Image (cartoon, rainbow, N blue to C red):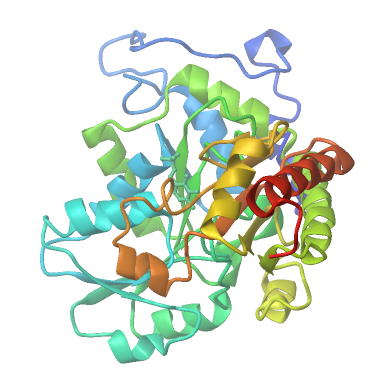
Length: 392
Ligand SMILES: *Cc1c(COP(=O)(O)O)cnc(C)c1O
């Protein structure tokens, strides 16, 4: 019988009754660069840690199991994973990519992959007819859902149908919801990307990235890439991510429940002109979310009445930290304009709705009341300072 996700976060099925590692409950860190061979032409199964290391391999099996993939590869960062993925394409290939992507992915595509001769068409995959942009050179569609930071949602199963009809690889960056809430491979995607730095690690202390696939041919090419270009995750970092994953379920549930409370509170605040959280029934893709995911995550974006107001909030929060990144136990507030999306051309940024009044929260697992009090204090002080307590 298929095990449930919280069990899969902690146990690998094949480990049951296995007495290796002296019975250690925590998987050992094999901090070794190389492995001795028992004899000529013989191997322990490991030769050199760039190719594979037991600790990294154990983590990869756990992530493959969480995403229901046949293989998962662990990289030193999310960007290193996406770079390795781009090596599957050659000059002249064309990719259709979502317009509202993680800023680092946009930078990679625009400045490195395109230099290597790969062409990109960037469209709103949730609104536009993807079929219109497919040419005989198109090889893949690359999306995030919900997107960063505008929380646009694409129907993965519907897009996968189009991709299959045109023999395109469907790639989904699933960082925002984590495998706890969404499994794109089960909805027909071919490759799932994760920044393991975010929810999988969960503690804002380790960088990592993953590629998970449901296809044997893709797994084979990626295995060749990781051993050749050497972006594999180090043993100690593999162990830290493994440790983070053990609590993925409880962290996701708690962070989501906090996010709901904060979203509801923000909706009632006068200076807030918009709250974008896919768990709100007012979100345009609420129904798609209900169909394709088991939850709504803990990322929320909101817009305030002015740039000055936004900047002041960033300075006045005390418990909530003003920092890039997301998915950790600590609540972070981000200003996409100058942080995550600083390298995105201004016209593209504005077209995606990322104005200088937009703030993004990665809600952590602190007590929701304390987080709301922190925001409330920052709002009050800002209002006093900027508008001398008078309504603007
Ligand atoms: C952070 C992030 C990445 C990049 O991952 P790193 O681990 O920072 O290299 C890619 N995609 C999304 C959605 C992210 O949030």
